[in-house]
Length: 137
Image (cartoon, rainbow, N blue to C red; front, side, top):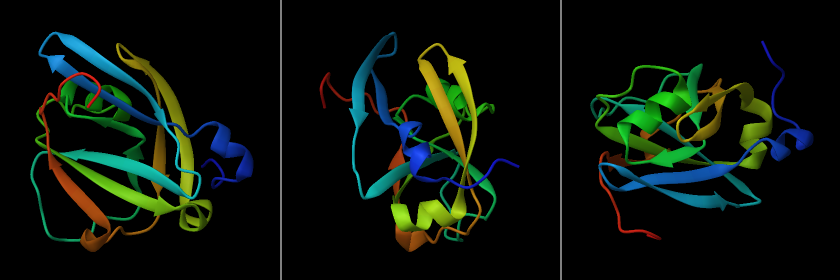
């Protein structure tokens, strides 16, 4: 298993946004930098109330497109309907998150992150998938 994040791993982390202006036109945005907080996402078929289990994979890609979510996590998430957003303080990330593999997809390169702790529902925000905001939103 790869080691937990350390200060050199922040060169790897990039919060990326990629939505679609229409079903056929991607809208790429520059990475979002938040020096004291890392933002991670999970993509799921249905919303639930339980904590998100420990040892689950997250991504730094924020998207409304199921196809991009699938590519970022390396799983068949094409039918996912919800995106969870977790704003994780760096102090928690350094102790509890492992940098995983980086994979290429049609929408770029994405790194997966293994979160070794339960994430409480009170710490996440749920978003409905397949919402295509206007360019630059």
